[in-house]
Amino acid sequence: MIFHTFTEQSLRQFTESVFLKMGCPIADAQLAADVLLKSDLRGIDSHGVARLSGYVRLWEKERINATPNIRVVHETPTTATVDGDAGLGLVVAPFAMKVAIEKAKTYGSGWVAVKNSNHFGIAGYHALMAVEQDMIGVSMTNASPLVAPTYANERLLGTNPMCYAFPAGKYPPVVVDMATAAAANGKLEIAQRANLPIPEGWVQDKDGKSSTNPHQLKDGGSLLPLGSDKDHGSHKGYGLSATVDILSAVLSGANYGPWVPPFVAFLEPSANPVGEGIGHFFGAMRIDGFRPAADFKDHLDNWIERFQSAKTIKEDQKVIIPGEPEYAFEQERKVQGIPIIDVVVKDLNELAEKLGIEGLS
Image 1: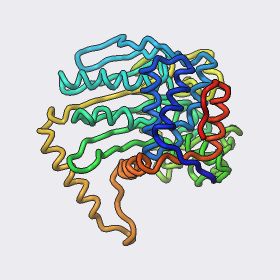
Image 2 (image 1 turned 135 degrees about the horizontal axis):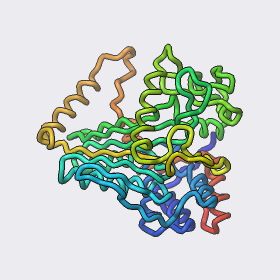
Image 3 (image 1 turned 45 degrees about the vertical axis):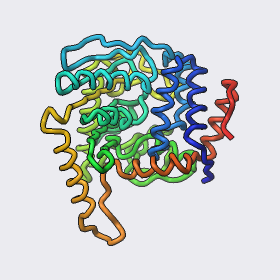
Image 4 (image 1 turned 135 degrees about the vertical axis):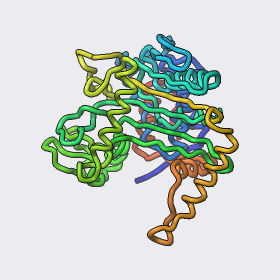
């Protein structure tokens, strides 16, 4: 694979230009770019600027509203439902998390369900918004149906990521950000672009047999839940995915299960939807609603140190704290730049030519 390295600022400027060409207001274009750049900075390359073309294609199909009227349509003091008006999930999700944070500031916690949205980037971005306010952040979303439940040979669930983020004291936040499938679809896309096989246990073919072909989904196959098969705990991944789907969509009035609209523009949404758009779910909890924030942070620091000092199987290994690798990537890439695989650079430059903006060089 060949990588090209770009500064954070050059990628940010390029990404903002794309969203502005879509007709997004300046503030929305900057916010959407920030969400995508956070992904690339944290080493989650599958959900960063590599997704730009996908958003543009959905906009061209009039499935993304560049100027949405995002609004609260139902609420109590501690809960709310937000209608994203088919806007970019990259903009809708931060709006909803801000609502959750404001409710938490007053009442101790805030919980917000979202309908009528689109792909919202990495779950960690939104959960970390709460961490900045000395709160615990919760973020999740349902997604295009690509995952077969345990024992099934039919796509009924998305990769349905969830994230829990906790503020520490002298250490970076603990961030548990994961798909509830064996692998995120973006990882398959990376393997496809690099023409590399994928590990066993990620996908099954159309006959339900394990496969290492990253193109298997195009041939009628499906992703597997976290755990891969029943003997390895796939029923647990299935249960987590179901939880995300129910909180994000059944609760909000979005589409759920096999009715969730596909991220790819060449596939049409269901002709008989059960809800509106994609759904998300967010939570913010004030730590001082349970104990003084400083005490919590001191003890989380202690928790981190104890796990870091754990006896490991091999001397050259260490226990990884959730969020630690992503934090390290972010510190490094802010200085050394963000590597982008050549096929993604080519795709982005073709997009730039089509939109009439300056490409990457």
